[in-house]
Length: 144
Image 1 (cartoon, one colour):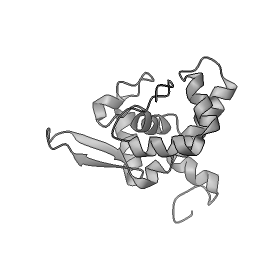
Image 2 (tube, helix red, strand yellow):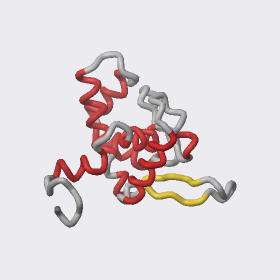
Image 3 (cartoon, one colour):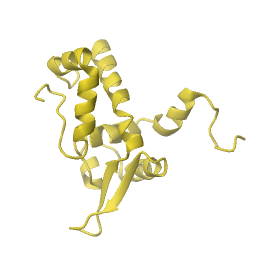
């Protein structure tokens, strides 16, 4: 067994060890594009994540250094989740997934105007998303 407990030292496997399930990228998506910060907010996503799965993913992401949590000053029993710099480095990957998905599947919940902006000005859009993470919702409907 490898000392890091990964299946292999492959670069792709490294990412999959953290992100390779059906829920993790959706939690990150909600942090990036939906501005979600609280546990209950993640539960409102249309995919319907179960509470035990959400708890597990948040813990795994925090242990991996992709997100961090702090106690909400206004409600001490509540945690606020935010992306770390390591987590923000995943934004270009999310952008590429959006572009790939929009190319290969019609009718998804993204505006053609936003996809066009991404395709023509990817670097600037990634910078804008990164700058706004945690501050507001970043619309993929072309309104930004």
